[in-house]
Length: 174
Image (tube, rainbow, N blue to C red):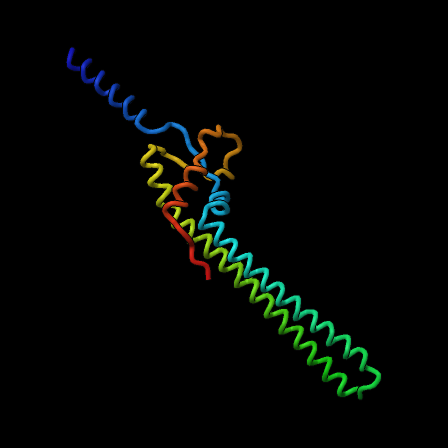
């Protein structure tokens, strides 16, 4: 009987000890903040924004040229023969169509590069989070967007950003 009590006591002790060895609460992280404010994330965003702005300026210039050409064609409508006028209108329409396709392709490529950079950064961040969880005995980390209310002391975003800035110096963006 004494041994059963002793075993029961040891079993309860071990069971209670193991439950305290890990945190009983979930922690949360704001992935959007990590992606936007970490050094590699913000540098990648700046590169992509610069590329977007340069493409936008390029397309605005082309669009202005097309509008100027359209005005010239409209002004020449009465002076040109109908057949030549139709050729110029068709050429302008083709140029507009090519312009729109080129613009769409360019912006799609930028969006694709942005998604690729985001995915690459998240892939590099996951092992960092896993290591942080093991070191701090955290069982679960939840995305902050899924949390309705939570104690701010359970948020690990800033700690992860600090580690990411140390361990990932930059991110290659095409």
